[in-house]
Length: 61
Image (cartoon, rainbow, N blue to C red; front, top):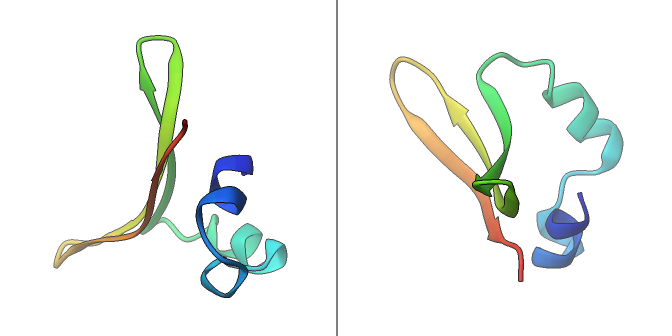
């Protein structure tokens, strides 16, 4: 969550309660990205049979 909060301005972030609710939607994915054992970023996306929509992507620095 630190990378998420630091990577996007507040008006582009989901509020905590909204983020918690949406995590229960099977089409929504909040995925940590690793290079081996090293955390390198995150991707938040929607995936359905019709589309894959990347909502947020950020790299850790």
